[in-house]
Amino acid sequence: MGELNRLPARELARLVREKQASPVEILDAHLAAIERANPKVNAIVTLALEPARDAARAAEVAVMRGAALGPLHGVPVGIKDITPTAGIRTTWGSPLFADHVPAEDAEVVRRIKRAGVIVIGKTNTPEFAAGGNTVNRVFGATRNPWDLERSASGSTGGGGAALAAAMIPLAEGTDFGGSVRTPAAFCGVVGLRTTAGLVPRQPITLPWHDQSVTGPMARDVADCALFLDAMTGFSTVSPLSVPPAWESAYAIVERAESLRGVRLAYAPAIGPTGIDPEVARVCREAAFALERHGAAVEEIALDLSDGRDAFITLRGEAMVGNHLARLEKLGELDPNLAGNIRLGLGVQILDIARAEHKRAEIWHRWRALFERCDLLLTPTAPVLPFPVEQNHPTEIAGKKLESYMDWLAQTFLVSLAGLPAASVPAGLSASRLPVGLQIVGPRLSEPRILACAKFVERDHPIGWAPNAA
Image 1 (spheres, rainbow, N blue to C red):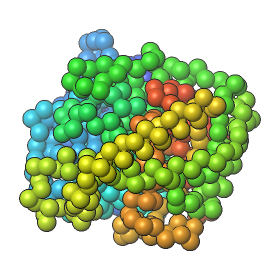
Image 2: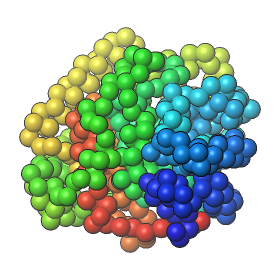
Image 3: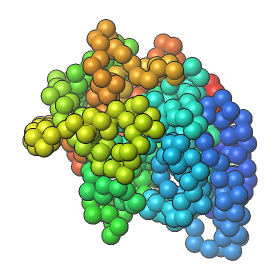
Image 4: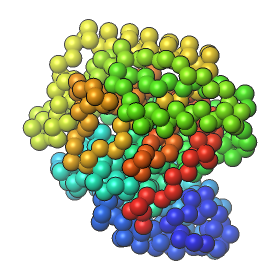
């Protein structure tokens, strides 16, 4: 069976169903991997040792009784430390909630538990998920398993790093401006930003907010699709909830034998910051390699830079809404987070109106693009992983950045239109750091996005991170 902690989630589930490995054995293998790797990487910040053991024993009893098993029965998963988990500490990476233990699971946790997963622990995040580098004052910094001196990005940096370090096979994440996609790119794993409403979010302070979504992360595309299936489904707890337009994303991805007839557009950059030349080269080569699988690939110019201010304005509005109850405690919050909230407090109603008009314009430009092509390919992150002590890149390809948010334009200009997108490893740099290719599609096109990602992954295997367990 090899090392259990390095097997895909779908293989672990198969071994459980066929009684070749027990959920307890699988859990123990992953706990041992965490013990080996986590002291260096600091990706898992709360270990749910006793709840996980109880769940694994119950899962084993179900197997031996011949009970009906979910598609992920006995598979360990990490939950981001902003997603509530019953009986397991959830801190939001904030000293204000350092000892907080929720009484109930979030809706997504309930769903994936029904599919059979075992929650092994919580993964690190910047305070309240506000930041592109995973550092907070409760747990410190998460380091990149490819180079421990480098950032794992954020805000689902703990999930991305734990996957790359072979501590967990699946990670739940959230994505507002790129918080699933940039950690996936930096850590060499797969992350999917979902269509708003596809994965119901509850509890959530702003239930009608459609730019922040929950999505799956995994070490490969097939596992990501399988995990997506466990998360999705209509729910009355979310006012945005939509059912998936397919029966099984995993089945669609597995059936995909080529990209014949698929029209792909490749844009070197979609935002104002430019792209590091090495990142651009790796992504362009990966995009055009898809012609070998039957796709028609065309390089285009797509400049959505004029959406920058709209995103930052609307993000400021959301930050104030999310933290309305904490406005008197701004001085106790991380400077990144406090700065975002203060920016939001300065937003006027005319700013919001103009931002919504610009957002509508950006949406229609995406819509028109998808009448000419099926998917857009572009670099996920414009830079290679930067030093972990650095809050954010200060320049890209020689161009100074105006704010810490600007380096995330490649991803937040997708979020602005509420579109789904995946990041998939496109190869390694000369310094052997991962490079992520972002694949963007129209609403509810997740299976097509992942099917395309499958062929990128097949062409460009990157192997294990040097600090994997």
